[in-house]
Every structure is written in C-alpha cells, then in structure tokens.
Amino acid sequence: MDISIIIVNYRGWKALDECLESIDSITSKTMAFEVILVDNFSNDGQFPVFKQKYSKFTFIENSGNNGFSNGCNFGASIATGNHFLFLNPDTKLTLEALEILLQTAVSHPEIGILSCLQINENDVFYKQNNLFPAFGRFFGISRSLFRKRNKAKLEKRFNNTADLFYPDWVTGAVIFISREWFSKIKGWNEDYWLYFEDVALCKKIFDTGGKVAVTRKATIFHQHGGASRLNVKTKALTKTEVIISKHVYISNQFSTGIQLYLHSVLILGVLSEKIILSLLSLFLFFIPKLKVNRLMLKNLSVYYLNAIQKQTWISPRAMNYLKTKA
Image 1: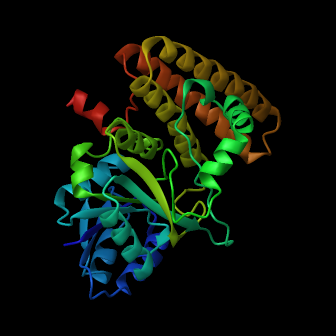
Image 2: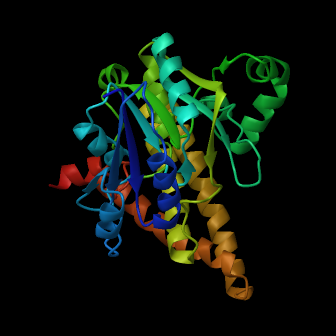
C-alpha cells in the first residue's frame, strides 16, 4: 500500500460526506491507497450510516473524544501504507494532489512533513508562512513586530516562485508523512487534545533534522471553519483549549526561566481580558458572543486550579493526562 489516508472526525458528518465522496471518485493505476476514518465517539447514530455508505473504507470508533492527536495515532496504528496523509474532514481531495504529494515526498526524502496549497470556498488561499512560537514572538503584538522587522527576509523566504517553500510548520488539515519519518518522531504528541499538535509535530521533524515543506504544484480545498461548532458552549470549550495548548507548548518547548515568564504573561493577559469582557456581558447581555467569555473564564479558572493541584499543564481532556489517572 502506497498511502494510508487518515481522517479524524467528531460530529462533522456533513463536511465529511463531501470529503469521502471526493476520495471515493479517485481511481489510480499508478498507486494504491486506503482510507481510514477514525470517529472520536460522536455517539449520534451517524457512524453506522457512514460505515455502510462508504463500505470500501475502514471505519474505526474511538473510545471517546480523545483528541485529534490520539485519533491520528489510532488511525496510524492500523494503517498499512508506506506514507500517511492526515486529512481534515472539511477538505476535498483530488487524484492530482494525491499523486503530487506522493511523488514529491519520494523524490525529497529530506522532507519529513509535506503539505500543499489550500483554498477555501471563497477561492482564497490560506497563508502558509507559519513560524514556530519563540520567546521574542510568542504573543500577537511581539509576533507582528517581528514580522515587520523581518519583512524583506520573510518575503524572500515565502513569496517566491519555487515549487517548494519551507515554513516552520503547516496546519494539521493536510499533512503527508512517510511511515519512516512518522516512526522516527514517534507520532503525534498526545499531550495536546486540540490545537498546537500540528506545530508540535512539525517541531519534532525540525529537531530530528528533517524539513517541513509545502508544494505549490498541488491544491486541496479546505472549507473555512468547516469542522467547527457554532453553539456558545462548544465555542467556549474550543477557545479555552487554544489557551491550554499554548501552555502545553510552552512547558514542552522552553527552558524553565522562559516558561515561567511566558506562562505568567499568558495567564495575566487572558484572565484580565476575560474578566473585563465577562463584566461587560452582564450589561450587554443581548450580545451572545460576550457570553463565550464568561464560560471561558469559568473553564480557565477550573483548568488553572487543576494545573496547580496536579502539577501539570496538560489538558484534562488529553490522552496523556487520562493515562496518568488510569
């Protein structure tokens, strides 16, 4: 088997249906591929329906909503391909893109992770000039200042016409990696439940001497916000996990002194903002978006208390946290 396409889903059935239809229409005489769908226990009755509809594909149900990293590793554990394509359910794949990803990866063994151009429903290409979070550019303002100071250098790096360009990291929506590289970096880091796991994966490639690349020869459709949920409670949960994953990344990537500084700035900044916006929401109760901040303040307060008690920044939802409790 040349390629194992691994998709992790959690109640994103509408987008997933379009994704699987696009893959189902692909036929190739030059390569063999399989599709593995890991459902993170959506538990809404749709799993058997899709399993029957796309009977050519392999469907496996996870034990719970154990996070994106765990779902990817679970899929990889049963995959038979020499290469893995981790794909979001809100994407659409073409034969051309699949062939180019494989050909490029095979001809460039120094590339640990390969991605391609991504375009949304408005025909807008996603920016893929991502840099690793660093001490001098971890937060929004410092990151903007860094990009302004290094504008010429960054434009030379990313705004060229070469077939390949090399960001520090690529989004987890489209990640092509050989089995050999995946084994070398020991897969996805299950300290992360959601968000930053793609940054951490690319960092492991970089630390192991590999390259992260994007090919301009292939484009994959990726629906903007296609896998997100719209209700207030879920939005607050996912936004809280963004903050939590930042803490996990800090604790995994920086020295003790820098960790202390970044954790402190992040906590003070986030709590100050959420307290102010939560107070405003009491008066401006007719603006639903403000309610998200009250829920986030509650979620973060619980998380920070747990972090103090358990002496860990890992999300209580992440598998590596749950394993310590087992």
